[in-house]
Length: 213
Ligand SMILES: Nc1ncnc2c1ncn2[C@@H]1O[C@H](COP(=O)(O)OP(=O)(O)OP(=O)(O)O)[C@@H](O)[C@H]1O
Ligand SMILES: [Mg+2]
Image (cartoon, rainbow, N blue to C red; front, side):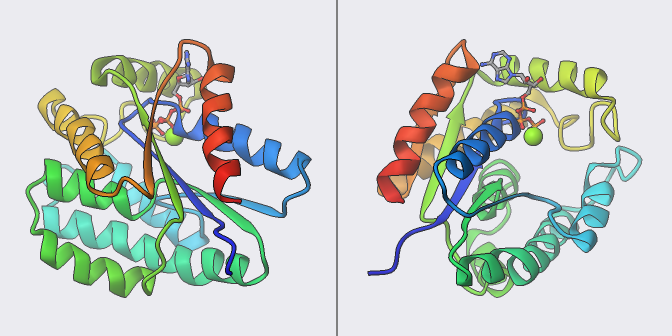
């Protein structure tokens, strides 16, 4: 039987995806797994260029179609250049966001057509789906506050980026969307409530990851 090796982390802004993805990556490497850590949008030279366009607040008024296609373009590059080659060499791939983010942000919260998304996403991913997706669930406002604080502390490229600037109602719909997705795909999508302590959240994530590896 093929071992299942593609893990993704999802959730609203500031829920701790990047922090937890890195901790999981380091942990699995210590346990002797060959591992790749990547992120979306981005993860390739081309994808990181697309990330800048997507997050740049000066690109205000970007249409939903344009936004969706840019995310999918970055994803297509990531699948082709990073994910498929790594999986074929037996690596565990951890991605900070993947297709579910487009499903939830652009379709659930942004009201884009789900059927069109499915067709475009399959084209971009060549049918690659995560074996396990962890949704880190946090109160929306709390997550946004953390993301904002992290922006100023880490001097990220954009202060309060274009996605983070969308309305609170939009981000609340994103949170709801992830929970709905988890109900629809119980086998693959697991919700983990973020714990006050980063290490405690990580323990819960490791438990899920080890279950499938
Ligand atoms: N359990 C926690 N308690 C307190 N702070 C936390 C916790 N988890 C993460 N943080 C902090 O919150 C901030 C956001 O975390 P992180 O960047 O990992 O989230 P993210 O989901 O990747 O955010 P984004 O959507 O902006 O990429 C970071 O500064 C991180 O150190
Ligand atoms: Mg992050």
